[in-house]
Length: 264
Image 1 (cartoon, rainbow, N blue to C red):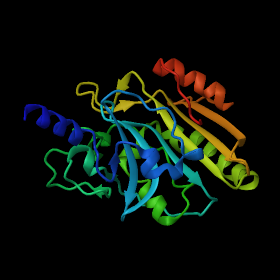
Image 2: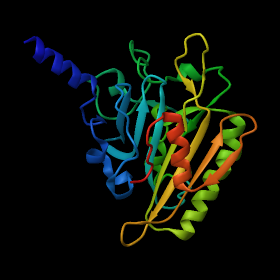
Image 3: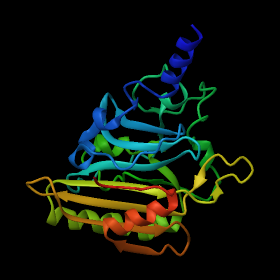
Image 4: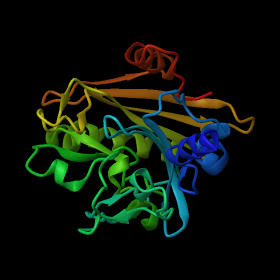
């Protein structure tokens, strides 16, 4: 009986329901090039999320519940739709409540224990940082998809000048270039954990040292015929570098001290 209860608790904590899943290649693999996700880690702090709004999956996020920021979000780019910004932020109920539904929700006052494994709006208040999208509004494929990007599991602390300046310019440039050059585009955007936190005493939400993105255009043989990577420092100077996907993977490998593949 003791063994059964132990196994049951492991299952519940693993997030084995429809939204927080055990293998998002199976549940929402349509957002990965050739159905294969970037590298995932073995640590228990990581969760695989099929980002769901109104029972529809819009993209996938690999989330770090210890640093309370995403590792990366993966999505398909289907052109510039000029979607409106929601400017209200959802959270992921299943990260803190295994009995919660699969859809992202707006934060409620009645939530007593939410935020144990994710960032909340209050973490950002008077922090001096923006909630920086990984899967961005500008590259969303529909208005509903744009609304679904407004979840704190798809955001990390980002310097305002970087978010609204150099990084925004890169998101816009990349979208316009890919619109002209590619039909089947897969994008992964992530962050590199930094050494500081929004609240230095509590140390709940990590402030990334870098934001990065990589893209892959599949040809008729499902090969990456056109690809590239971008990485930028998350600070006031915001240095942006463009590189190959291989070079980006090499940099991420140094950070995580393990092989890191964006596209497989």
